[in-house]
Length: 438
Image 1 (cartoon, rainbow, N blue to C red):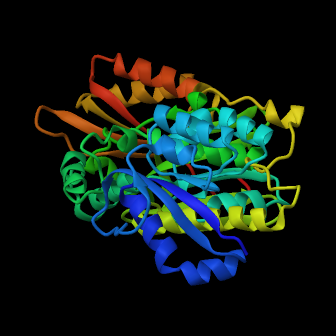
Image 2: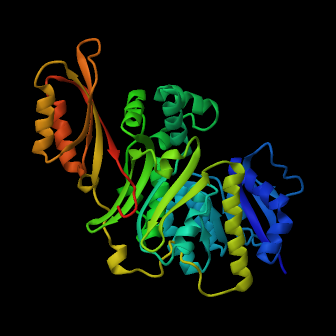
Image 3: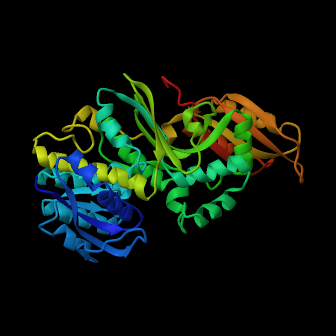
């Protein structure tokens, strides 16, 4: 059959991996697709050292690929927001299918892009945009299609997980492990997107839209980073039977949808608590199937290329069969007014348990006053650890609370921090059991 011709925009880490997988596994890919998939053109500013493009039509202008009449599928791997958006919309306007690994593009501009693609009758595939090589989007869209999804929670940023893993295993400070992650190439020179939760929020936004059939709403996601987590917090969490992970969490509730990324204490026995290093894992609770877990490499050249090429395969099969009913971009056909308008809940209305760490002057009545403030906000204490006084007569106090609204906890923390006998800000980490039925 006539080959499906692809154009690759970007030959960095993922682009180079995609090029190599497509060329190295060309025979197997052709057998799976039912026709050859060939690289028609590449566009690049620089080339990954493992990538040999000898004999390939190459350009430095990505828009040349988007308008090339011989290209059937444009693979967008340049990253970023604005140029990527313009490139994808140009490709769609020229009748080309699009495969992308760009989570920021989909989370922020996906609603516009999918509308344009629907009107043009082309596919936009984005499996690689979330959790690298883990096929979680296909699982949510298709494999779990019979289920009402109750919640999704995951470690969806490898950099943050690497840092927290080494802080726990080696008792090291955040800044020290971050510097190591940067030296090893796991973290960027500016690590803000990773350690402050922005990257994870992009991915969680996409997962939530597919899970619940709502529009992409990245601007409503709550994000909190891990830069304030200390080695002591990691140690105390361990003493209490928990592990700190930087999680993306989305839940369906009677009041709306939760969409939040923050450091979280989870029980040691949970599978997510035992995902280490740069690995990613996403837990999904469906009403019929129960809990499921998707684990693997969340980044890297060929793991991500695996997902990119799988999307190219899906597009090639669609071109081959020319069927008229495709799996919807975000899993749900049309707009169900009751479901699609589910509001994203503000963080202050969300209920969870909390870990609190504070430094108090070592004198009678201080702990009693803290307990009174919590009680006045209807916050009950589950566990308390009071350590020996440090130099300067400050006593570290660790509290674990039962579940309460964020709004009440915010007010309690404000009052505690205003006490003359409390030194510095109160450290607050949310606690989730992520158990079946929650």
